[in-house]
Image 1 (spheres, rainbow, N blue to C red):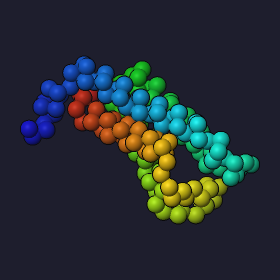
Image 2 (tube, rainbow, N blue to C red):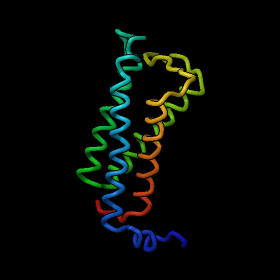
Image 3 (cartoon, rainbow, N blue to C red):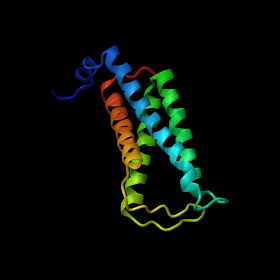
Length: 144
């Protein structure tokens, strides 16, 4: 298969489109739940400042908004936003896992050189959201 637009859209059944919407939204919701659950503990390092906990809460709010937008609209723009949210989150977790990035302005240093269940779960969910949304944009015809 050469991957022409016509060939890709033959793969795009309504069931596939809905399945990708649900998959990506569910992955984003997993990310939301993990970040909300962990936020309090991460905020303790900077109770009066921005802190990692507040950054987790912001990330969770954005991911939830995008998940809802995707479920309601199924638009290419919502899938594109899902790529941005998922990819930025998985890059951040990998960066702060493997690189000791110092505090930059109001952003705290968040180096944490360990993996644990929730962290791994969110990283996988973020990657699934990004890849699933990328597949949807590639395979589904433009509707908006």
